[in-house]
Length: 196
Image 1 (cartoon, rainbow, N blue to C red):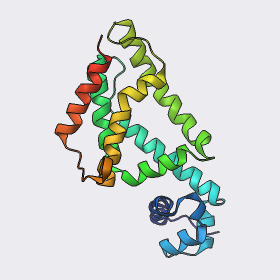
Image 2 (cartoon, one colour):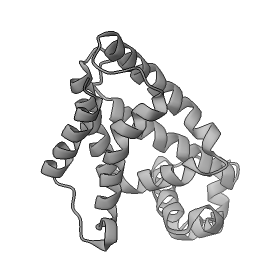
Image 3 (cartoon, rainbow, N blue to C red):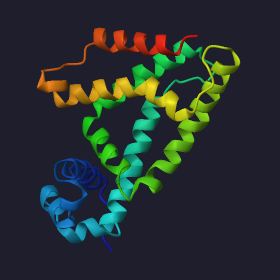
Image 4 (spheres, rainbow, N blue to C red):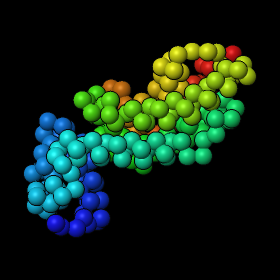
């Protein structure tokens, strides 16, 4: 039995993310990935049972990595404004520094892998942000609302701005670069929408 090479595993993960973004799930094959990594297909099967196992493991790792970055330093006891600002800062940073990971995660969100991959991430965010929201409501900082409403208002604009930035263009194909000025002006509008 061959020994697992850590460097090769990292190369496989990196190239798998690139390939998934480029060709999607339908075009992704183990042979294409092996060729991209300059290794044999048999080598991939040392690390992963099959294509589904590879996609699932990489999806789990990518969502856990980005979730950890987004929640780094977050305290559910923050005031609503401070907590939302912290979330915007860390979410923007993680998404801007990891554009390919974000694209793969978006692909996974609408795939058959969705349930397995997002179950643990959803629970982590629900626990942390759920406590944060409950405290904000109890302190009268925001009104009680469904989590989906909260997320849409709180983070929908941020995700749209990051997507425009990563694509290099906004609505109508106009060139776009996300600046701190645009980011925080948008944040202030979002915050205003929540204030009572």
